[in-house]
Length: 65
Image (tube, rainbow, N blue to C red):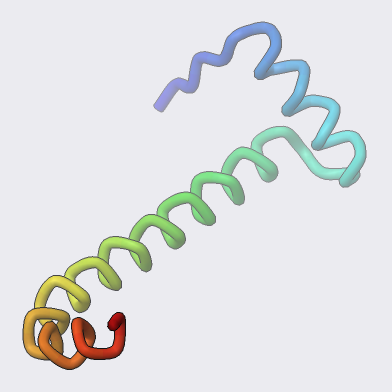
């Protein structure tokens, strides 16, 4: 896999890596892991809410009044 970054993105990644005394690759790989994990959680939560909210719609409407 090849990751093409703009000059600005590359510079920002380089600075972040230097601040953390890590390689640019390590910082980028962590960012990808965190992105996938966070989005996977959000999708799972959306699926659960889509399935369960209709069951409680009436109660939620009453609470909102």
